[in-house]
Image 1 (cartoon, rainbow, N blue to C red):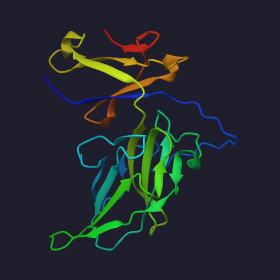
Image 2: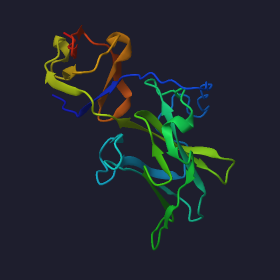
Image 3: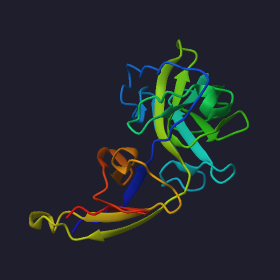
Length: 243
């Protein structure tokens, strides 16, 4: 039986009010679905992870000081690049949200990557770039889905790298378990995951529309299952049990 790590994501769209209305940003032509992409063939080994844990998914808590994300990558050239980065707040479908950048960014809305190291005594020459987020120049002010975007400022601000990450507030508890699949033909090849979401003290007016669950296999978005809707709705819990 195949065994794999599965990660459950829950999204609860929040309602924001503002004195101003802003048009929704258009997605990039190079990356219309705002996926994690490397768009420059000379950029290698790009990673975004929790500091001290390179194999983790890029998920951090909103509360300041708890987690730091590390972006690092190599460029196959010893000429220093002027890379500029920004972050974009996205909705549950990974499209730019209607928030203005000043509503979700505390600090500068874009900044340069300045932690740069050039290779020495290696067969292949490269330059290593590293960025920690949040930092003193840029911090997120809201939870949600985010897209980290890196541009080459020396090449007409060409988009070269994007990475998805999530900022969370642990307000709910999720109880999950693996069970044998209900479909007999998948008993030896698949797992079924059933889970409940406990939201004590928090009212959800329309859970069928306000809550979206996504199940990831090994952090992969290309075969993500969802959005899933609750199978059973109770006063303080939502049950996702697909029998």
